[in-house]
Length: 138
Image (cartoon, rainbow, N blue to C red):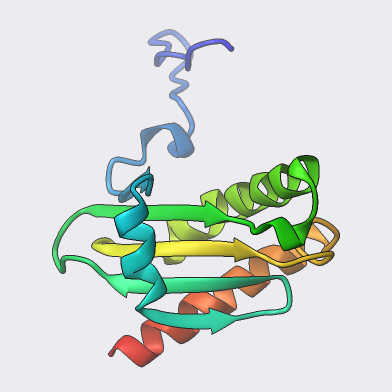
């Protein structure tokens, strides 16, 4: 992987805006079981391809936390990991735009659907779930 380009004073080019998003919230991963259990007691929104659990952790905190899980119902380890990879990729794009700082989100994969659903539909399912969770929280 090559590092991003620095501005070239001769031709006036600068790095792309995606590389310099200073106002974007920080996204971290939930790793502790206690945090997953707190999210499980919070509000939930189901979609065709996933279940999204969301809770307000600390209003005003600049960090969004994400967790991903798939039960053994989803399939063997290969199927579970594929489903989680797809969830992570969709969350990277959607939560960066629609997620709210100070929230925890846990995305739970569904059997035979999460790994097979078209990627654009997976992203729209996540956007719908976030919209519903945020609407009920207000």
